[in-house]
Image 1 (cartoon, rainbow over the protein chains, first blue to last red):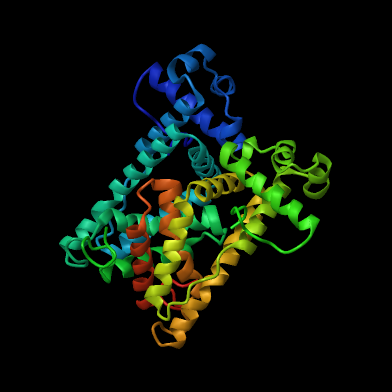
Image 2 (cartoon, rainbow over the protein chains, first blue to last red):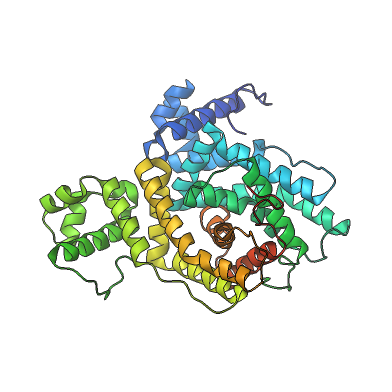
Length: 206
Length: 206
């Protein structure tokens, strides 16, 4: 994920500046939220010239969009456990780990809140989730190939179904988010998938 | 729901003032979001004295908490169709109607965004969802009584599972929210419930 200390990235000065600025932007979002985000403050935190930050990112929304792009690029690869139960459980546990991590959880809340009131951030957030869903969808397609699920199962919808109850708890109901919640989200998505609830042209398909 | 034009409520002047102020607060949230909310502006919109608003609600977060309490009180009763499929579908369609309504959808986004950065609002939002989940849980208990679902099925978790994919689309992935999405969310929650995924002490329970 973006801003993880010790992350080694390729590239020269331009890449180093981007890394420093995006890490500072993440810190500022965690501390003050989207409405407290300020390019001059981010430049100071990153120890980068203000004009460099304004020239490259122009606006707060441009900076958040780039942060989300970086989060998508840096986010971890899917786990392949060899069976659908294990894969979905790994996915759900990763989501819970991320959302309950003090820094990452606060960062996700801040960008989701920002997206509710800014269209450019909405598009960047949607692209982030599209990237993550795309990363994990092959585990569902593999389950179809292995005969664990019916042909025509909408892989992306199964992956969305694993995350959905976890985000609902984080953002709406406030119910606990822990490993047991993760495992139940994975088990429920798997049970619905096995019952054919995500088969396109099947029951309830779109 | 709060602020629906034409809603007739019991009570005298105090109740009328509350209705006017909460409707104005909703309008202001829809237009400017939580960070643009201002008690003096709400008083002006409601045509109520500023001191009345300050005396009764004190702070913006106090006002939003009261708005959420009112939204819970005013929200519609559950539909009883006589079978689990019909009940869950009615629940999912109601959620989609609410979230895609221009005013209600913007209002929900605003209070969810506010809850990410304010604890009092978080608690009020969580109470709102607890009330709504409590309202709909009996349809799952009735399905258990009718023998449609196993004894021990966690009714609240089934109701959360219906809403979760809809909120995930609204707030995270940005995928479409329509009647087909609602029906699929209901069908998936039902399939998982029938498979025993929400049975306490069953697979993945907590």
